Picture 1 (cartoon, helix red, strand yellow):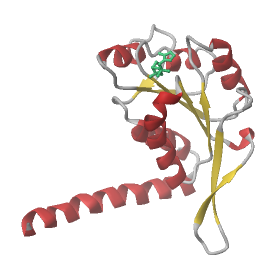
Picture 2 (cartoon, rainbow, N blue to C red; picture 1 turned 45 degrees about the horizontal axis):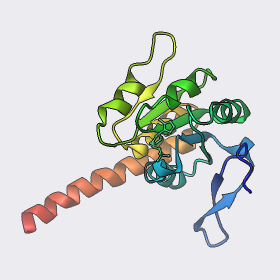
Picture 3 (cartoon, rainbow, N blue to C red; picture 1 turned 180 degrees about the horizontal axis):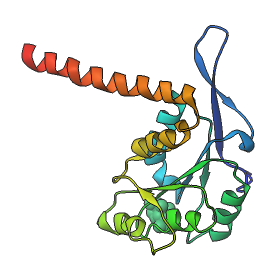
Picture 4 (cartoon, rainbow, N blue to C red; picture 1 turned 90 degrees about the vertical axis):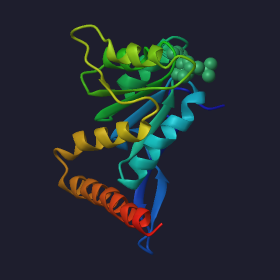
Length: 185
Ligand code: AIR
C-alpha cells in the first residue's frame, strides 16, 4: 500500500557514465517543483509537465490529492514539500490551486483540465479572491505550467536559464524548418 503522504514520483535527471540522461528516484527534499493533481484521471495533463521538467533536469515530486476529497492530504503535502513552486492540476470545480495557495507563500500555477464545460475549471482557477494569487495557464497546458515554473526558478539558476534558452531555440528551429517543409511540399 502506497503511503499517500509520500509523493508518488520524485525524479531527478542526472547524466549517467555514457553521458545519457537517466531518471533517478530521490527524496522529497530534493524536488524543486511539486505537481499536485486532483485525481489520477488528470495524469495525461500532469505527464506534459513531467516531460518538460525531465527535459530541463528539474527534480520534481508528484502527488494525487483532491481539494474536496482529501483536503487534509493537500495541506500535509504542501507543508511537507520543499519545492520552490507548485503546479496544481484539476478539472471541474478546480479548487486545488487556490487551496494549495492558501497553505503556502510559494508561487502556485494552476492548470485547468478540460471536460464537458471547460469554463468551470478555467474560472475556478482565474477567479481567486483578492489576497490569494494563483497563476493560470491554458486548458490542459501542463507543459506551459512547467515552463513557467522553470522560468521562476531560473531567475536564480543560470545553468537552468541556459537549458531553457536551448529549449526555446529548439522550438524556434522547428518553426523555421516547418516553413521549409511548407515551401517544398
Ligand atoms: N477534482 C477532484 N477533486 C476535486 C476536483 N475538482 C477533479 C479532478 C478531475 C475531476 O475532478 O481534478 O479533473 C474528475 O475526477 P475523477 O476522479 O472523477 O476522474
